[in-house]
Image (cartoon, rainbow, N blue to C red):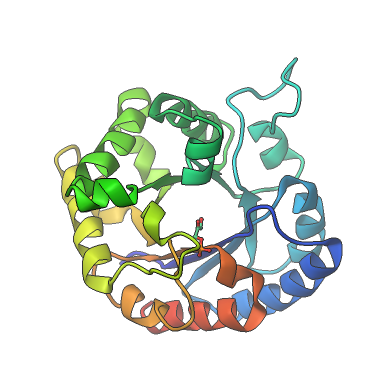
Length: 254
Ligand code: 13P
């Protein structure tokens, strides 16, 4: 049985005041969600504040990206070892489509970030997913497999024993066009079958989250699908009632 995960990705949003309000609320909600892993990935500037407020609760936290380097002359970068050792992050999102798109991160760069995160004790959350044109062309699984294969080539299949995959169709992110439970389940199942060609144990154990306009209304049916193990939540993770309702949906399927 895979423990569901509900993870917020705040992207470039928030203020010290909203961080304080939301983290206090989510720490309480996480404490009441015994069978669900709840986490927030926050803008780097707020991670220290999140750590102060969430320490001692069941709420975990992480970064929205990390660099491949841990220290040195890399101006502006985010060190995986600092995230882990100085700020007690549990997770690092890598390969979000906004990073791949706006920062030209290739599958190889994302795989290197995955490795750096894992080598430094963080749990990488590998984001994968196709564009609308690729969806229309029936290439969803080809894209997802290539994005995963780059990580397997660099890190080996066993790296997914301690990692999370988030399937986030680009056309569903921030658009209100949530993938139907059927589309999402088919893709998650295809991803798991692909992993099974390398290792049945890894395929059965890895948690695959859905992301893309997942909200209080759409989460219950999405989370009830056999291969969907929770969600990576953007906009709705900035609204306390909505994120709380999504955690409730995960609890119902735990
Ligand atoms: P939305 O939930 O705002 O569509 O964003 C999803 C996402 O990109 C999470 O990483």
